[in-house]
Structure formats: structure tokens, C-alpha cells
Image (cartoon, rainbow over all chains, first blue to last red; front, side):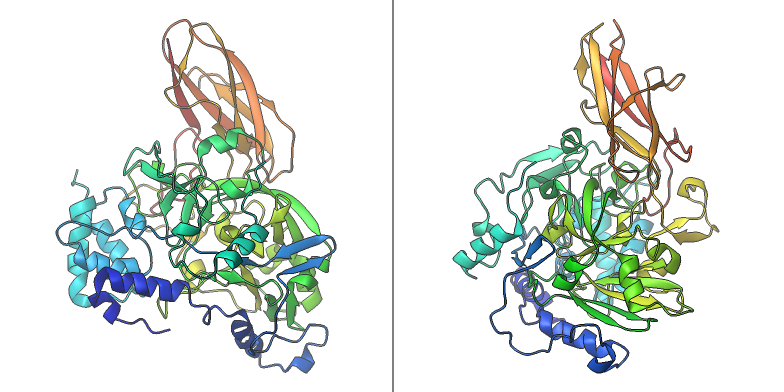
Length: 158
Length: 410
């Protein structure tokens, strides 16, 4: 799954579009295709080896499927949702790198509800985002993001 | 119990309205987005939170909308021993969550170090021997907002927890059906949520093989008698009674039996606690070993009074709330009104199961003057009490100190 880097250059509009794309792509969220991949992963065993199990679903266009399944007195109904996104952005001086990097994976509430933390803690958080969570932050933006976070949520040294 | 916005109603509404709206704001009922805010009693950091509704959810405390972090308003815990599905807290790690679940196409894989890999439909799973258990689901970081000095992470007050009746199938039965091979050491669980960015660690958790097959760990397709809310892991999630919620993988789709220990990020690096009593260390302490977070510890809360409430001098006051033993039942819940010098046992409510909430209540008489400080302490059936002083660790996990509440006498 490629992350279009042009989205960062277009700012909010690009982010909104990207958000829509990554959250609401019906083709990527196609059950049958994912399941077919998983079925292929099952130790490379062909369907014949899974004598008791139903055959994995093939990645073909589905015929009209029921919206519910039932068994032993319980019925489960298919679900479809739209998730709200308030579109809150970081603001003030130095907020641009935070807006173009941090909001790719999570909304601003993650940051805005944090307590004030020392600079070292913010450095650690940004490093975790990049190293553990693979945030695609341009090297020249790292310092600016830390500076912005310290400016809005920096604890004074005691 | 409220039962609005169940899955079936949601699908019908979406079909009627079509795919017209992207943001979804126009689709929500008029009572949604009231845009009120409440203040959480957090000592550090922002206290104001919007009250909002999300699909299938009532009025929840919004911490983050993408991926959702929704907290249960604390007054909900005063209303009953089970937490309603539409007010149950919500916590996701990654933002790519499938927004359409077709129950006919969903498959659960059981594979890895087994004799025979399985691919089960929901119909298969519904037809397997059914089990049910009441169990508290609590975020590892519930109450993190109270840590001092403060730590980074989801800034919950005490509402990242809930008690539900979980109905489904025993994991043991699925493992027996696949046939676990000799040499299996662990079982790893994966759901259908995915990271936004390529290469980020897909959320996976694992349990030791003995724990996985203990007959209590189960997969739930119902919560409080209804299918799981989409935001709480529809159609299937893992239930690990007595253990923190990080293990309760949502939209569970893949069960992999391992013959070597799991070293994925979410076990090896994330969700680890100091290997010290109560996972407690000093803020600048180093050099201690860590282990994966595991069993919960006892907690108790007053639910019918808030800090700062006024009571009349000399008046009788009814005090009540909830408690849970952590990874076993509640032995006693005791109240102190003299700063912890003495403790009086409260009356416990009906027992819905050792892993569930337990209601408690007692009556006191307000003093004629002075403020009144209430302290509430649970001791579990293993004899472990709540500690007086809160623990601290850098991840903000496992808080369970005795809760205190101040009342003013006027």
C-alpha cells in the first residue's frame, strides 16, 4: 500500500482525500480477496488437505449474498458504517510539519489531549512514531515537529 | 437497557441513503453531535472532552476520532452491573478498519503448528458448542490520565473499562478441532484492522499455549445478548477473562499456533510492564526487567457520588459502587471515612461471575462538621488488596490504587 507523498504537499485537502481513500476503499476492504490471500498462506496446503473445513472463499465477484447468517438460535447481521472525522488541525506557529506528518495515521485529538511533557519525552514519542510505527517523516521535519510539540505541550523543567 | 443503533438497523439506513455522504455527518440521527463537553477530573493535561456519538454508540466521551478512542461516561457504572453495548468504551490502534463486514463471507482461520488448518464461517462458529461468561474488559492504560508525573499515551480517566456477558465458543474447542501438534508454545491472534502506513506492525497478540487452551479463553460473537457493536470488534473478538484488554483482539480473523515464542512488536516491545511488585518503579529508575502485561488487579469505585458533592451534616448517606477482583473474584469491599485508620465492610451485590463487576453498597452518617473523605478498597479472593499509594511506570499501565472521594458537609 503506497502512501502518496503528494498528499502532504496539498495540506488539508490532500489529507482529507487520503483519509477517505485509506479508510473507505471498498476494493481494499474486500473480504473475499483478503481471505483468498490468507487461504493461500495456510502453509501452502491445497484445499484437499483441509478435509473438514469449508473451501476458502475465492476472489471472484460475489453473487448477491445474504445480509445475515444464523446458527443455533443466534442471527448475525452484516454491518456497514461511516466513521466521523472532525477534521481538527494543529494550529499556530510551526504547526505545518505536524499537520502534514502526524495526521496521516491519527487525528489531532491524540496529541491535543496529552499532558505537558518534557522535551525528552516528546523526542521519544516522535522517535517511536518513526521507528516503531514507520511514520514517513522527512528527516528535515523531525526537529520542527518536536519544537512544535514542545511549544504547545512542553513541561517546564522542575 | 438501551438497544438503539443495532447492526441491522444501521445496514437498512445506509442502504436507503446510499453512498452519498463521505464524512457521514449528515447520516447520523439528530441527537448526535450535541457538541456538549464535559470535564474529566484529570490533574494534568486538558480536562475538556466533547461528548459525541459514533455508529451504534450513544453519548460517549471523545478522546480521539481516528482511530477511535471513546470513553464511557462514569455515571453509566452506577446504573447496573453490566455496561450497555452502546456505551461500552472503544479503543483501536490502527485507522484502517474495514467499514463493511459481510457475515456470509467472513472466515476465521486456525492454522500454523496444527494437524489440520481450518477456515470457519460464522455459521460454522455459531453452530459449535456455545459458552458464556461475564468478564470485565479493561484497557491496560485505564486511568492513565491520573499518573503523576504524567506519561504519554491515551489519557483516560476511569472509563476505559466495562463488564459484559460474552457469548461464543471456547478457543480450546477450535484448537482441539485443528489438533495442536507437539511442540506448540503459543497462539497468536490477528484481526482485520491494519496500519495506514506500509511496514508498520500489524496489531497481533499472543497467549501461551496452556493459557489459550484453558477453556475460559473464548471467541465472542455476542455481547450482552446482542451481536458485537462494530466498534467493539464485530463479528468476533477474543475474550481473555481476567487479563487486560490488549489481548482481546477485535475483528478476530486469524489464529496461528506457534512453535517458537512470539516476538512481534506488540508482545516484544509494546504492552510491557516492569517485572516488579504492582509494576511499580520510580520515574527515573532504570535497569529493571520487563514482562508482557498480563493479569488484572483488584479495583473499586464509588459511582453514586462525585468528588466535591455536598452532604447535609448528620444526614444518612448511601454510598455505592462497583468493584472487581482482577483475575479472580471479589472477597470484600471496605469503606474508610477516617483516612484509612479503620475500614468497614460494605454489602456486596449479586455475583455475576468471578471476572465481572460486583456492586457494593453501604450507609454512613455524615459528620456534623468538617469535610468527609471516603476511601474504598477491594480485596480479591486471593487476598490481594488495593494499595494505598498509586503505582507508576513509564507506560501508564495497571493503575489500581484505593480511590478517594471528598465530600463537603454543609
